[in-house]
Image 1 (tube, rainbow, N blue to C red):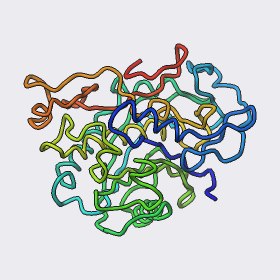
Image 2: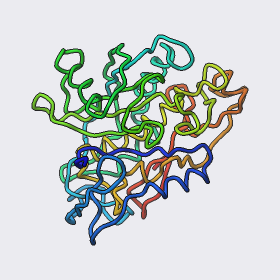
Image 3: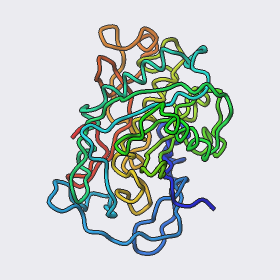
Image 4: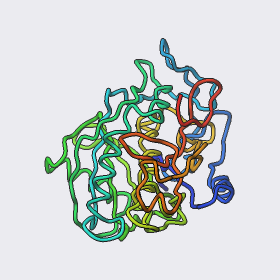
Length: 327
């Protein structure tokens, strides 16, 4: 039995919205008792019921918006640091390339302060609120091509920290991003597209996330096979990955230790808007999309860092609560 140490974010296995809604409903955990279900590793419940906790005191965030506060901390760094461990073969073809690495690092370097990221400022704890600011703080390459288990992902992070390749940062989120040839054996592409959790590593509370290259399973983890930044038709891995990373980033910041913000079903903020993109625009010749994205009439709903992006909405913890692209 898996202990409730990890919150898996289920970016549902689906290309079309109607099918996605059906699949997501099948994945929701069961409710037990009168309190909120404590999230476990894979969108199920741990069998425990969270004790009710009063919302943040003296902050702009209040409860009563469809998601509840359970007393744990949020990440209040201004900015929060984002690190990447590129795992596998990222000097290959398709979306397993240096160009993908550059685009994703640019994405994490510019999402801070964006309209979407500011939705996270509606979450807080008893000492402050999320800043909405994120900084790309560095990356390393791990060229191993071995498949990974859950514990293997943690070991990849621990090794990078122990070797001094990345700093040991309690104000950071470490993303293990795997090339499309890598399998995460607990269910990547069949049960989830990414997840996040935390662990005490070297005496520090380290938040980390697994996100695989969704070109491994386009119909499962990409909303469109050609995205606004695709280098060629049907090569949507970087765009699909940016969406999954955004999902995990919002959750890791608002519920880093899995004891802060989630609803009665154990869903965190991004889970509540899974594959819900809201209003979108279509790439055209006058926009920022790549040539392939324009040709395929790819959709997008966010623009920042001189790029268009297709990113799912986040749950706004204000005004009664809703999936939102901006405040």
